[in-house]
Image 1 (cartoon, rainbow, N blue to C red):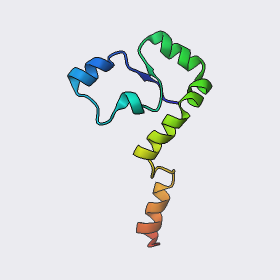
Image 2 (image 1 turned 180 degrees about the horizontal axis):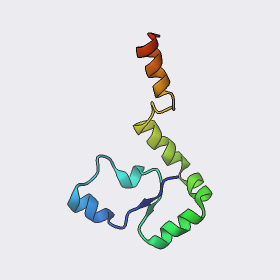
Image 3 (image 1 turned 60 degrees about the horizontal axis):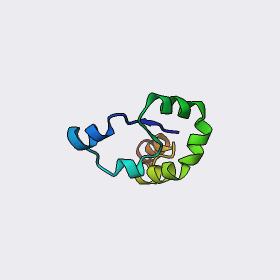
Length: 84
């Protein structure tokens, strides 16, 4: 699971640099604003993962759909061995 410690979310979003996408709506994990929330989430990672699995899947599909753990093998097949 991914946990986001966003104690400065408003300042980052509104004043510093902003986001390239709607981070608050699409973040693949909880947005935690207090250290106690981080501690609680760390104590129950299975629950956090289950609660955010749909958002995690959507995020992975959007930003890392080609990440399947076989990139190096595809490179070797295509460029070093000459496969199709």
